[in-house]
Amino acid sequence: MIVAANWKMNPSFDAAGRLVAGLDACSFQPVKRILFLPHPYLVPLSVRLGQSEIRLGGQDCHQDAAGAHTGDVSAAMLRDCGASIVLLGHSERRANHGETSELVAAKARQALAHGLDVMICLGETLGEREAGKAEQVVIDQLRISVPDDTPHDRLMIAYEPVWAIGTGEVASLDDIVAMHNAIASELPKSQEGVAAAKVPVVYGGSVNAENAAAIFALDNVYGGLVGGASLDAEAFGSICDSARTQMSKS
Image 1 (cartoon, rainbow, N blue to C red):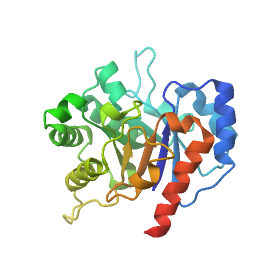
Image 2: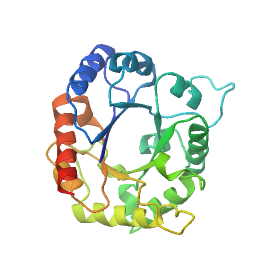
Image 3: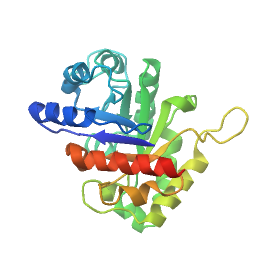
Image 4: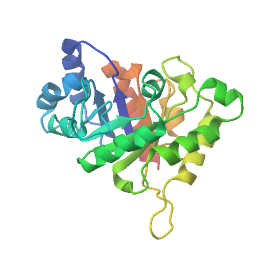
């Protein structure tokens, strides 16, 4: 089980320090915790966390290794600042910055080449779901966004229905299972032709302390990508505890 926090453009640095202290005060082994931080926070918070079990990640990286890209951050810079993973293709990047799946794949190649693991986000809009195109949209994103030669052990997938992010709305449990099953069936095959079962698919979209246990109990759901609730140490801890409880049942 993986429980990842996407802080987006939050919070203040003082609040971030207090939040990290609260998160690091508890261990939820064997749950894997990841914090996707605003880029300026990576160095100071990696120092504060020291040898913590919590992994740090960037929220995006550029598709080029270096160059005249004002305001952008390279994969190597993230790595050198304490990140070991990067979040790519989030719907807010796709919508607000016009990122295509082809661009996401280019960024993934850079990240992998510079030693970062990748969590690649997929998700449909409400209009696409209402039109009956949800699964096809997500599978097309998966096929294009993930480079063919991505090592299975360095890839994570996050399914986040766009209409459920930050809205309080959550896909039905049946819809989550159906989409996670569809994604799992399309994951890259190993050379032996066996499905890459080790590629975890996590669910995002208004995951909170109240609904996490039910979501984590679903087939092919290997954790969550948490937005707003990750800015509250107690709520995030409760979500992590739900993941740990589910692992103990498996």
